[in-house]
Image (cartoon, rainbow, N blue to C red; front, side):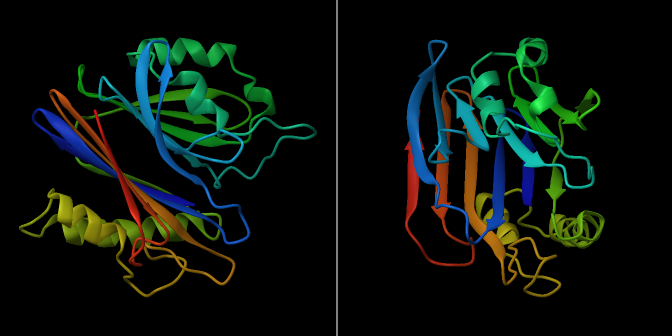
Length: 237
């Protein structure tokens, strides 16, 4: 359950991600800097060390969402999807990331969609794993959105896409404040289909925002529902 919005710019991009989780799940750790393969990487994490979003010092963002439309699940011991980004981080380009998948225990990993944003080559790549095969899909360098929902994925996609398309016609579309408003939006109603999601058992539990321009990488992390006023963390490279 998540919403990822990419704002593609001429010489950079901005990306926002709502993380939707069960309210019984442990609170995640705030973002920190760590070194992977000689590069600095920023991102929040689970207590176990896994993560759902990172950005590195080259401006490459990786964001992972569960793929609920695929109902098949691993039988037996599973490997956390939170380890995917740690394994593919700081590889520099989409080709290296794609090759790295061959070294991962995908057969023990439940379905997911991984979005990679590579500003140096202006590539937006989505990898989809459905327990049978890994498919790579190349997207154009343009503003777009990805949605997942464990409640009703097709329904959430339809409703959130309507809100996204309507918001994109606003004069402020593409600005940082526009992106934040979109991710705390409760249309069509405060509930399972709104971008800022709320259910009795689950909700949008955090908002992460990445901003990249040549020579500048920034990550903002809002702990708690995007519609709530809580402490935010800010890191810059």
